[in-house]
Length: 262
Image 1 (tube, rainbow, N blue to C red):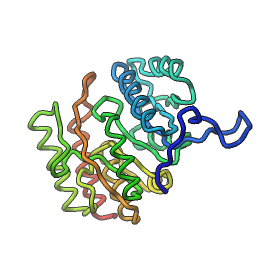
Image 2 (image 1 turned 45 degrees about the vertical axis):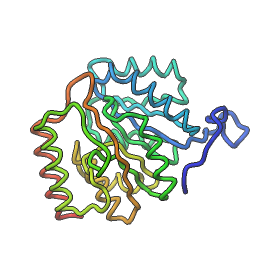
Image 3 (image 1 turned 180 degrees about the vertical axis):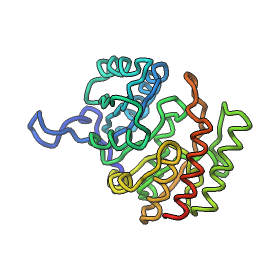
């Protein structure tokens, strides 16, 4: 199955005449947040613009982990602005991890296709058209954004040290895990067929940055078709990066574990 187009005026009308029936949704965007008060209004605006221009019915599910900067309050204002059918809130009582945030959001998602992305503006919504086009042209089950594609992609705003860490992390994963076409295993900007996520997420044991790597490796091992598109990654404009020594150590432990278990 590939993407079908829906008239924007019909975006949230069900095939049933019952007004209480579940609306049809092509795409669900899962947006985990933690201290993204300044970034959230901009990324939501850009998402609505990009998805509306694609003529796809969509919803944006915000999973906030009790951000101390009151991100949830901003999310509520955005819900009032855009409407509860477009902005859906699924807050949690504390910071419980990226993998469980996606699982939590997936439980409420109504879309046939699921977009995973960061809320810090490092993943620009303008690239979503490329994801949709790639899926339509290849019938892929997963489309992942890559910063390291030959002739495209890139990273802006990172120090030389962080670029080296990312390159080395991906090179190690390529050698040890042989993930197929995916060249950017630590990237977090992806489009999944819903059934793929429903099958893969319960199998994933990793947390943090290793979660993304295990997701793509397990999807590939299960025989799903994985394709990629080049993206430009821009470091966050507001807030602090969540990558530290503990995340790097967790990544290395996860890499070794996946080598022996997948």
